[in-house]
Image (cartoon, rainbow, N blue to C red; front, side):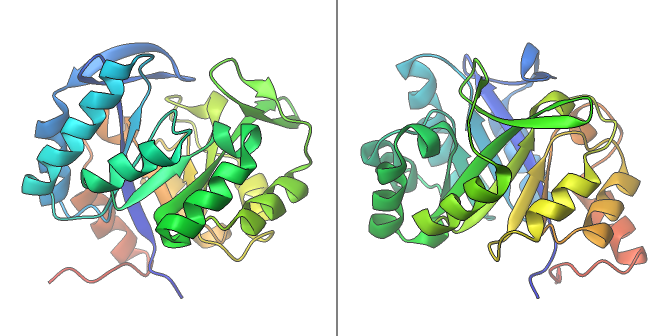
Length: 253
């Protein structure tokens, strides 16, 4: 059984660390390198860096951040955001990324994902799924305009497995930054559809939310942002809470 993981998630734009709600209305929350160093020292299991900028300079800044992180951060780093070519995957890995997150391109260019998995190894590729909820319904979407994907969730999960992704990140778009919990039942269903490890992103507001996810679903990792940016919490406290509630984590020496 895989150890359960807590993964701080950082959004990068205009050479700064930002955070918003529902992936809109971003505000500056600090210097990326300072925060990366802190999370590394606080026993985070991994980090995710996502470029949400719109131009080439933003991607270059992501590469620069990765390169600097290799000097100060000694935990695995996943990087992503607009990754749509083998050259970009190669650049991210060359600059220090252990894994690359690919989301929209899975729908737009599935053959690219297959080639990336074959070239860099499936352990290097995380396939992202954006889910948009509306009352008691949900839709798979892609891109910044959240265009609906005409796939059933079962079909899309199977597609990701066939394309050779090493892990799946499930992003609940409308829960981003809300800190009101995630969709436990849907997440549980998704986890049961695949043998690949699953990461969830969106809605984590407190330690109880994290405990419920790990105890009630087969989710392997939780990507967190607001719980660290806007509350008096850190990875060390999360680890302590989970240990007291019998959640199996990696051992810190």
